[in-house]
Length: 416
Image (cartoon, rainbow, N blue to C red; front, side, top):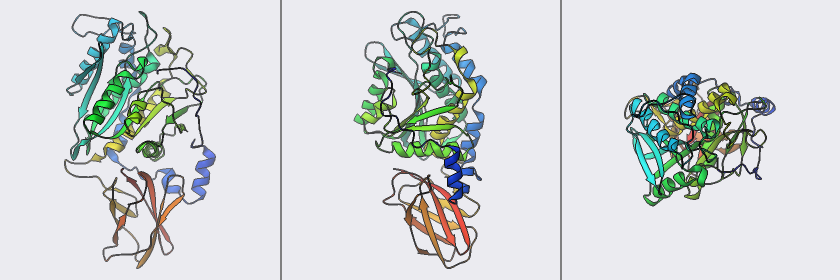
């Protein structure tokens, strides 16, 4: 991270406490919070595949615990500071890892020394729409020893893990696995990329940035998501909260809104793109080894790290929209409602899998259970109808349909 200044805009009003969950269940949203039906088998597979040993294996090498060989024999990456030779070796090793997983990595040079490393998994339906999952591979302090295990070796290795577990799955949108350089000098690498993307009119659907995701000194398990009302950033945060509950991750999450601007997500906010930061509890439990030569693997909590990596990777997979076969969109459904397409922008087709009454009363609620729209419709002969989403903010919603004495439920997501 760029700075260790204590955030001033902290807001934890969206922390998902047990008390809140019980209240929501009492309000009749048991299906939403218990996650009875996983929304997507590919997302579940990706989350389950995130492996702690894989994360540790890469961090041992990226932080100088174990040597790497990028063509010049065994070498330790002792520092990834931009002025140190380890920075270049790290960039070469990252490319080597992407290549080993079957990607064609691209080096994006900038300034005198900077080099972002990116790999893409092309979308099968909308390749022009990009979902970026990212971290920064450079480190602090200046000098010959800067292992940067937590900041941001933890996020960098989670990006590589994302590339590994998502490699064999298909998505509608393009996934970009990005590792930025010179974050510690003022978000230079990500700012360069975001400005170029804006200048080229690129469609970036979501940015999920991971920066320092492995330190939990007080052992309370608390993590944070930083968001702001920029583009669809709030909706991306909502999707992350949905992943946490629907896929049973059980993470204790606090939301900072307005989020801080001390990491690479802010480069995309500057250009008007939606982005979030996934981070350890940097507000109240900062890593004492931050920006020192002692920022090493031995001080990190591997189980905690895996949990945050799973959240970010699951969120990226949801935003990229999994497909079962090329050209086929997965239908998300509950046991009682089928909703297609999902996510959607303007309209969805809803079909009731049970129920016989002529009139039904749908209610759309947000993730907290607040009703945002009531719609009275008459069912078609095939127990289905079209639902207009215009006017709804992008984000995750629950559709609840009163059909006589029955309450039918289904999840849906509106794209921006």
